[in-house]
Length: 79
Image 1 (tube, rainbow, N blue to C red):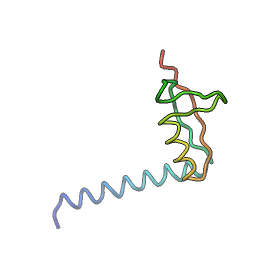
Image 2: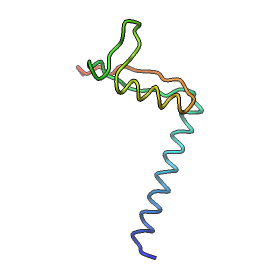
Image 3: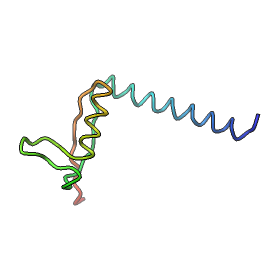
């Protein structure tokens, strides 16, 4: 066996374990919390005060796929 393939294989296993535990944490919490900035046209609030845009749409899709709600926390870019 090639040592590099053994190292890569163990690295991938560790990454999968970490990713699985993050997904489990989010599912158990029932909520995906996403930091977001108000930066039109990428992300902004519509007339109903709902976040829309690329990041917001992606976060909503990931949350839906996980079966959890999404909570947006606005990041203050001035800090």
